[in-house]
Every structure is written in C-alpha cells, then in structure tokens.
Length: 150
Image 1 (cartoon, one colour):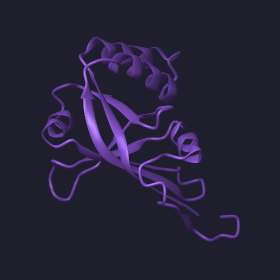
Image 2: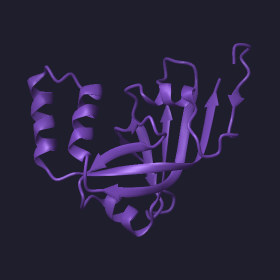
Image 3: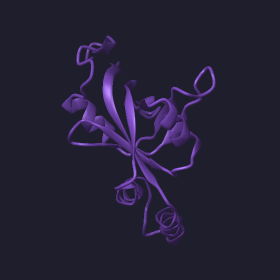
C-alpha cells in the first residue's frame, strides 16, 4: 500500500481480520443489501457494529422491509467505505442473517452514542423515539469477506 499499489486480500473467506475490525469500529455508514429484494439490489445506509466474535449487527423495526425480506431469504451483504477525504479503502461482508428479538435496544443506544452527539437535545429525543419503538437485532455471520485498500 505504501508504494501506491492497490492491495486486495480475500484469502480470509469468512473471517474479519484485526485490521478489518479496527476499520469497522469507526463511525462509518455501511450499505446493506438483502437478497430477496428487487434486481439489482438497492443498498440502504445503516448503522452497524462489528463484534468481538466477528459478526456484524444492526437494528431495525420488526416489520421493516429488510426484516421481512431477511425472514424469507437470510442472505445479505454490508459494504463499508472510507470517507472521500481518506485513501480508498473498503470492506465487504456477505453472509446469512438471523433476526434476533433480544438486544436491539441496547445496540441502538450504543450506536446512537457512536454516531450522534447525545448531548444535543434533538438527538437525545431521536434516541428516545428509537428506544420507545419495537426493534429487532439483525446479525450477519460472515461467509465471505472482501477488502480493498489503495
């Protein structure tokens, strides 16, 4: 990478590396695509968390379109890219998703603190609204991990 040559590494087919996890723990948006959608898939920006056990989790309403589609076909992918003012880098995770009824509110609170300034009363109110609504936790178990850095 230091010589200006792009670097790709897809050898860890289903595992996130320590470098991947460090990158994914930054407050970046991921773009989620689910399998049971229109062709071509239409990714949506999402908050997410990379866990110590190498899974990716996010939250959504239990009746959201993505949750309904994932119940029919549990395949999804998440792509996360560095901001435009940094060197080009991205990580893509694809795998099967489980829809978990527990833990979504705790996850939402952690992610809100990561992405928002919760000292801002408007953002604190936004979080209260999220926590007042029913949520489920989506957990992606990586089966394929691809990455690129330039």
